[in-house]
Image 1 (cartoon, rainbow, N blue to C red):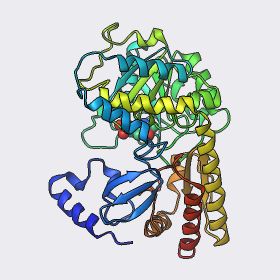
Image 2 (cartoon, rainbow, N blue to C red; image 1 turned 30 degrees about the vertical axis):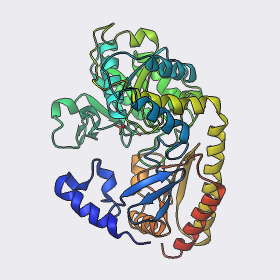
Image 3 (tube, protein in one colour; image 1 turned 135 degrees about the horizontal axis):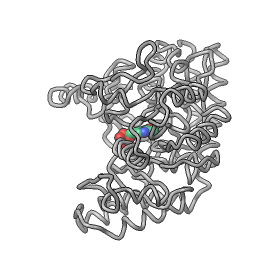
Image 4 (cartoon, rainbow, N blue to C red; image 1 turned 45 degrees about the horizontal axis):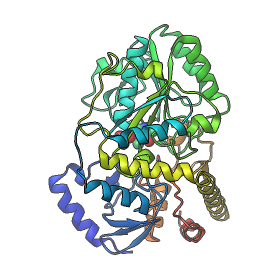
Length: 428
Ligand SMILES: *Cc1c(COP(=O)(O)O)cnc(C)c1O
């Protein structure tokens, strides 16, 4: 495949946009080479500026669970747009999508809409702090909750339990309130709680991790967090920006039968438009302004185009809930096919999968946390990524990302993908 016009466009973009992109991972820095500029997309396929057709395994990083330009979503947005695109006043459609979301997800009575997953997680943490009147939070190394200051924290050095900033611009003052724990390590969480008695407002977690590849929680881990939170008056926040409306109608809470206190959403809930949301039981949500003292706001929050896209998407998922099984089966098929192709060529690897999330790690050990995810062979991943791209298959340009399977992918597409893996495995 030839990617000439994409490279030209990338050079132009770099003159006026930092790094040529509006979100860093798009720039291909982890894999080298120039990013692909997309022109349009339909169903399972991307069509780029050079006229190539690519099978898409990123799907806008998750939202397009039914494929690109899904007709009911497109129609809903076009119809809405003709009637005005923003009012900054209440609209009926906001109540409609709120009612639907609350009916699909367990343990939530009220939901507030924002414009991104970052905003949802940032607001959820503020709400948890306001509700518990405590300051510190626990997050897990390798989990991503957006780019707000409290989350851009890495493990602190030596004996300190608090984190340190992992981006310039995040202050030490902010960092000292974020405590970093190891994913899937309940003992570590317990230690942190014990050395910060009565100071922790919330634990925030990706209940199935997707931002260090796909990492499922080990048996008992989420249950253990629930008990620790109950014992210590800590709120448990499930960041379901990736998993919500993807792994089940009710997300991971439904999938594993575990109750969170606050849940955050993004990606699928917006049907491809910029939407995030956070939700909880009434007692907690009533702490938000204008009912309560915890402030949170947004000029474009509940935007009619975004709500129309989200409502159309959730309606489809609500009415056809066999979709979740169907995409999980496709993912399992892909898993088996890729594993077979890699084993035939003796390529050391580990594949993780939950529902329609899957990741291929070039590592011989189980991938259960950030450290084990980081052990993967990045040179092999780079070759794998570019090999796939040359065969017209678009996977995430980083070894720390999950692939997202959509209902638009056919078994023929999956076979094409498995054949591509077979063909390139020779040279990995
Ligand atoms: C994508 C993501 C976010 C951030 O959402 P944005 O819309 O990119 O701000 C937060 N949490 C998780 C788990 C995510 O996958």
